[in-house]
Length: 215
Ligand code: G3P
Image (cartoon, rainbow, N blue to C red; front, side, top):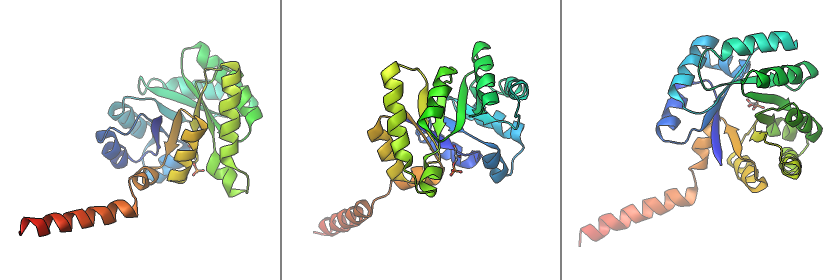
C-alpha cells in the first residue's frame, strides 16, 4: 500500500519523507495557496525532496491549455505527474499527454462511470474524492470498491489513488477495498500512529520498569 501526502507544505513533507513514509505527493491549486508558496518554486523543491511521483495541477480548461501547462510542469522535475480534471477536455489532454510519455492523474472523480472513462483515456492514476462524497451523504468508500472491482475485471492498468481522505479509518477501508494508493493530509498520517491504549501501555511499562530498577 503506497502512501502519498496531499500537501504542498515542505516542512511536513520533509518530516514524513525522512521517516520513510512518503511514496509520492499530490498537490492542487488550493493546497499550494494554503502553503503560501510560489507554485513553481514549491513544486521544484518537492520534486527534489521526494523520489516518488508528484502530481501537479494547473488552471487550464481546454485540452490545449492543459497539455501546454502540463508540458511546462514536466520540466520542473523528472517525477512530475500532470493532474487533469475529469472533463471531456481533461481526458482529451490525458490521451495527448500519455502519447508524449507524461504520466497523468485524473482528478475530481466522483463516479465509477467517470473512473471507467479515465482508464480508457490511459490515465496513470485516477483520484476518486471520497471525503467530499461522504460530506454530501454518499458513501465514498462504496465508490472505491466499485472502481477497484471494475479495473480488476478489465485489467486496466490505471491505479486507484484514493483522495479527499479525512481519517485513519478512510485509510484502513481503502486498504480493505484493495486500493493501491492513498493520498492523505499529514495530520491523518500522524493520527494513524496514535492509540490511547498504546500511550497507556507505554506509561505503565515505564512506571513498572522504574519501580523494578529500585529493587
Ligand atoms: O487530493 C484531493 C484532495 O486534496 C481533496 O481533499 O479534503 O479538499 O476534499 P479535500
